[in-house]
Image 1 (cartoon, rainbow, N blue to C red):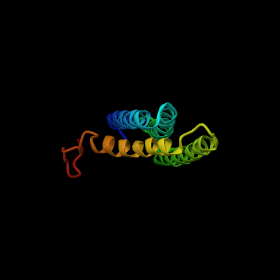
Image 2 (spheres, rainbow, N blue to C red):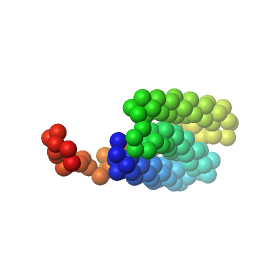
Image 3 (tube, rainbow, N blue to C red):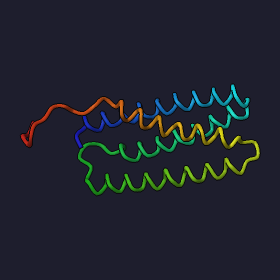
Image 4 (cartoon, rainbow, N blue to C red):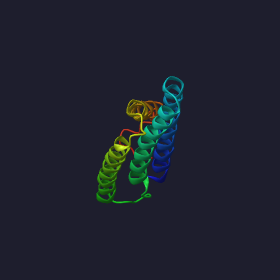
Length: 137
């Protein structure tokens, strides 16, 4: 990948995380209003888990600069995915074992981060409309 493509990917990753944070905060505010402060805090925890997991994956995918080998990028993608899944499962298990966590609020905000991911990715600046049809730039 070129340096410009890497930078574009990083901007898109930031946009996704911002959308996740926005939707997580909306859910947390709704949980606070409906169920109280414990639910609001639990929702923030759920959103934080989702946002941190996405950030870990984005970092793993986009940490290499221009000229990285395909094998190195693929290994980073796979290892980043493993770390993301292990991190998410571990934090969800710890959270659900706590008697102070409002499970429904935590899950609602965690799921909202998926919608934030989809919205951020869909609004990621569109497709590159410049077509070269195999001709070098």
